[in-house]
Length: 110
Length: 113
Image (cartoon, rainbow over the protein chains, first blue to last red):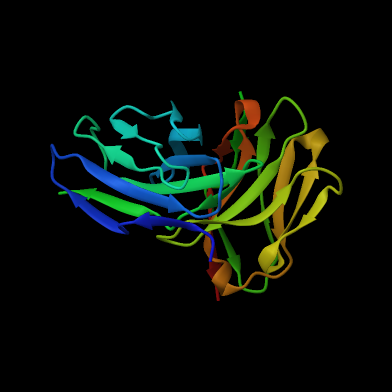
């Protein structure tokens, strides 16, 4: 069954810690994306990757990092430099601009 | 720059009533246009898309949308709303160079019985 898998579904982070959110896809899509969602603000693009070993900053990349070593994987690290990391994070992949989304990871700072 | 405006943050309709969610876009050429739906705590699911051709597009779950170039609009409609349609709805258009999607702020639909 093709799709995008995000893990974990819920993640708790202590202040000052880095955490990594996983995103795996078996749709054979070249492009992958990370969005952040906060109430009333829609989806804001953090990073995107058009091809393996290449990625670009989105609108709110500060405090985040990514890698794209394999076509099917696009992990997102939320670093301690991200001042307000509590949010819902969505990973997507796309073909012809049409995006397919994972089920999201809710990150909470405790 | 490409942008999407969804003027209504919240809409409440009665079950069985008709629905129209508004979407206005800013785009340099004829755009691709998308509507997505999100249930609480879930990812986004594609409802329908417009690439070209017929300006009235049919989607899943009984939704349709009409592309109106003169009004830069792509409004989502449903003739009779069901309680299960309560969710948040997002309109989207490709960003610069068509390499990512730009989303509106979303419209939260509440359905009252």
